[in-house]
Image (tube, rainbow, N blue to C red; front, side, top):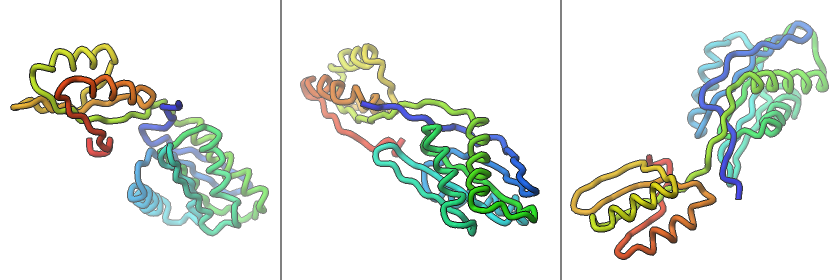
Length: 205
């Protein structure tokens, strides 16, 4: 079971590729939703008010994957798809790559545009700091203090991460588990007497 993915944690450094007078400024951004994507595009349009095209591709998630490509006025499939191809080549997700073009007076043709946008995306991703992250499952645990030692022993042995805790009349813990170990950890914890356990959405923490 695949339970890891590649992404970036910070925006990449700006890259510049020149071809027959045209300039292609490349950027890579970590993204988690479409609102962030819209905000990034708006920022780049302010940063490059005289640019002719803001071509991009983004990919979100891992199961399922969502993605989108945009040629922004360039011939169909000459910009967005070559950029997206590099996302696939680098095997990254939760990321957006934008190539901002200033027209240099010489038409590149569809083939030339494909090569230019592909190269712009390639050098941008090649310069980005790509990291591998685990796909995690979150569980909320509710139990009495009499189970605390047993629960903490399981957390220690299984190397689980406590994301949130609230110790009042009962113990409330939210833990993070790697996806491939989630079922076995759930079974182990659920076997404890008077343990209440439920899966929660990770974006709530």
